[in-house]
Length: 241
Ligand SMILES: [Zn+2]
Image (cartoon, rainbow, N blue to C red; front, side, top):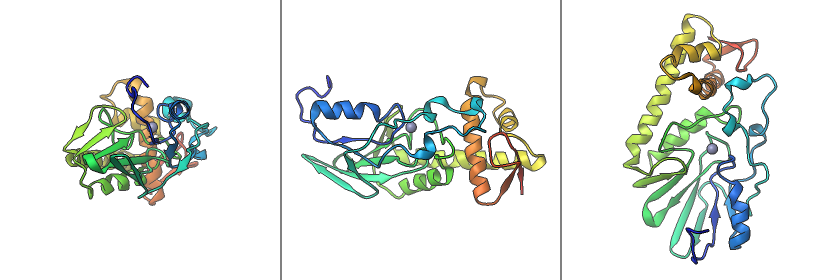
């Protein structure tokens, strides 16, 4: 509210319901009387940890959700929000979370990318609501667009964003190739895969790495490339079919 000063706030746009995003919206709405706009409530699949998921493999922050948030106005892909001097287009971009929206500000050729494209690291895809196929297809959608600058919710602004998006796609594709190669030799658990693939990465990051590897495996299982024994969960042994 200090930053807003005496300007009029007419709309509050919410990208998604992770705990570092939507929780302030409701109190800001009460102070400003501006309605909140969002895709919808926190998805059910993202609210609970499954019992058979190894807790040490979970990314704590992205696991909890803001289950209290309900947007005043539900919006979806292609919806346009016009206000005094601005035109926003909403893009539904599931992948990181199924209720994720990006917002394109026409007047400034700017895309507010939320957590879909971040300026400081790659996006976490927490299973089961996070979906790598959706994430990748929604990255590819951005390649067809013309915004000149991205303003993510974490990290600095991204100028010349298309090469940046391309490198995110390539990074995930390389990771997929690595995972297939590793379990082609012998079946492995997520933990073993992380030890293999991320051997040069600090162990404090292995939790997040595990959730990313798991997202890749679920995606490969969906298209029939890999299978898991005994069941599709994070503690299973994964093999190439
Ligand atoms: Zn998030």
